Image (cartoon, rainbow, N blue to C red; front, side, top):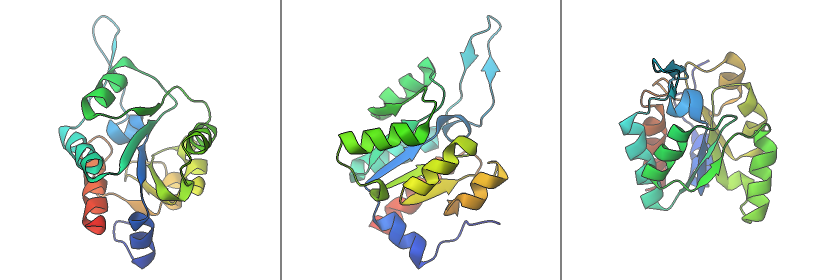
Length: 169
């Protein structure tokens, strides 16, 4: 089921957001693994997504990344975008998020998460707003509050950032 429209409940969830977290592979990237001739793993990020993240941060909404994987390209992109909250190479996203929220005295329901796969499902239940992409696994799409029109790595993050800013303004 497509959840690209939003109702009053979704609007209220988005209005409460103080933080937005993003998975990396499949959300900030298209989820593909690219390798150079020398075997180095490469990642492709969308500049429109990056601008959306910068606008969220400028508006005062915190941004963080939560991923089961860690990669130098992810760290470089995060630095370019001014993202300092990084939970990378975590085996349990919920535990990492809950520890962060407790350490930073942040209400989990003032946070949102955008993810595309099974490791994101439990985190969707712990945050106030959940979002996904059309190329996500079915279980994740079913659990999400909202699904972008655009695919992961192809402007989906920007679409969500624009929606959040539109509702907050």
